[in-house]
Length: 86
Image 1 (spheres, rainbow, N blue to C red):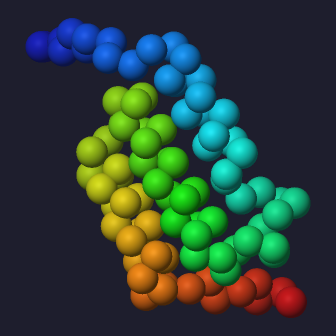
Image 2 (cartoon, one colour; image 1 turned 90 degrees about the vertical axis):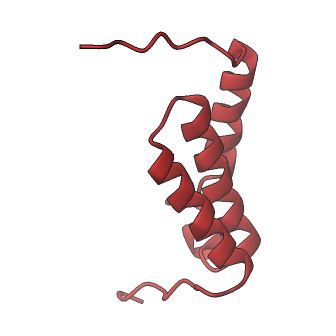
Image 3 (spheres, rainbow, N blue to C red; image 1 turned 180 degrees about the vertical axis):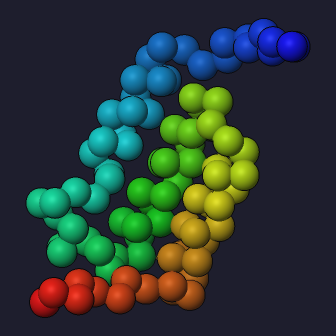
């Protein structure tokens, strides 16, 4: 088995700031209804998720999918369908 030696290229500060921004931008139970259809907020959430994955050695295909989803939101090619219970 070959083990990759990962050279740390991100400072601890960069990792923490990315995590903090991800936590700040991500939609949650309290702001979901307010921002679920906002293209800037949804695309920013996807972009910071991709950055977080990139910094934390995430799967490259998943990172690419997140960025593609962000572009679809920016272009308004996808929209939130709303809550079925409302």
